[in-house]
Length: 132
Image (cartoon, rainbow, N blue to C red):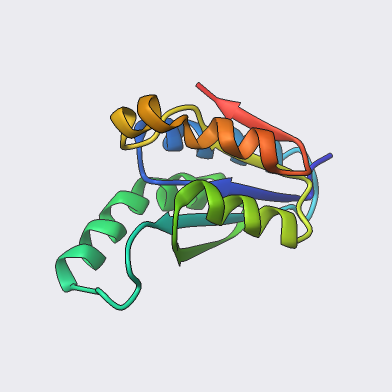
């Protein structure tokens, strides 16, 4: 059904639920693959140990769910606006589906500027599953 799944994660509770759903879908198709993308906003030159540790701790739950699901996956950290980064990555690569949580770590920004999941659903050229 869905052989190549792009999972957008920010380590939030909704991202964990999206990860669980992505694993369920991947398990339906033999030799499926989940590409996890974690978009980090800000300048990529501004790296600090505390930011790297925070990033790793946020993605830990996603990583654990994927390991337990026994599916093939890869986690990639990218710098840039979350919506723009995911949209560009999804549209420039060969995926069958994008899976994303309905809310992320920054609900205030989502209310003011529009949610990341909404922007992705509108601008990605493949099916998008938004998980509540």
